[in-house]
Length: 261
Ligand code: BV8
Ligand code: ZN
Image 1 (cartoon, rainbow, N blue to C red):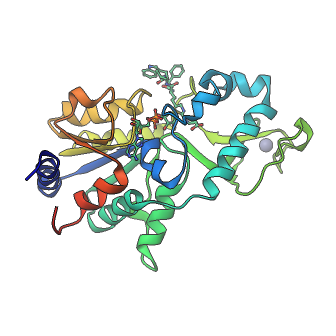
Image 2: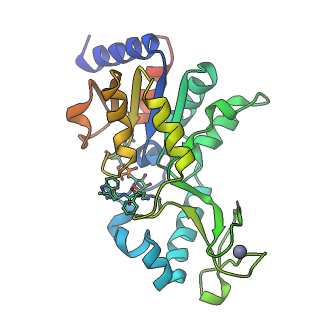
């Protein structure tokens, strides 16, 4: 048996034996769906600098440019489908009540996978905790209005940007920008699960963005095991108990399902 097969068997054993599993995903889990990651070769940040676009200051200074970037990302994602990794994680969360999906992604692909795998059954146990919000929700920059929002955004001028139906002020993407706090209820839910989880499965993240990147460490500090799935080394690799080197779309279905390794 080669090393990769042995590692996969070990990963399966850890997953089966664990009581309480927190799964943390990043942009890499959506890479095989065609969604660009942030820091990879085709990284989103390559063409743009985070501080230029994903910050409150950037939106104050040039809401049109920021909306142009999010409108492009939304359009890109709307053409993408959940891949085998999203679907395997959705099956795992639907089958095991002790599995919690937590994502840094804003692309909605875990939710799409949950609905696809659940069919007519209730998908809610496979809906992820969205630490950084969603491309498909907006919130008002003045009042408390927050709502689902899909479809094209005309970012050709400030006059065509989406405005709040209640107070007419600018709407913004309901995502967490750098320097903004994450939604406290979501953070408390994620770290609350981490404190009692026996295993953290970390899939497709460079583990650079905090506080999300601290989630696996919280599992480890509470005595749990950390398993990383990634084709490359990350800031977490040295702290992982087991590293499954490769693309999530190939590894997750084998890790989650029975059958020959
Ligand atoms: C905050 C939403 C409090 C918008 C994003 C310590 C503690 C607290 C804060 C900080 C801290 N240190 C620094 C900070 C500040 C900052 C931060 O973390 N900066 C970093 C860059 C150092 N954090 C914050 O500002 C956070 N706020 O803490 O509030 C506060 C309040 C006021 C003042 C200070 C603090 C807010 C962070 C949220 C930012 N918003 N996104 C949007 O998406 O547009 S972050 C953005 O990066 C995305 O959410 C993304 O998910 C996230 C992380 O990136 P990754 O998902 O990891 O993607 P990346 O491309 O980096 O990596 C992809 C990986 O996939 C790679 O490893 C690759 O090898 C792998 N891969 C590729 N293909 C595959 C694959 N894996 C598997 N299969 C494949 N096929
Ligand atoms: Zn409003």
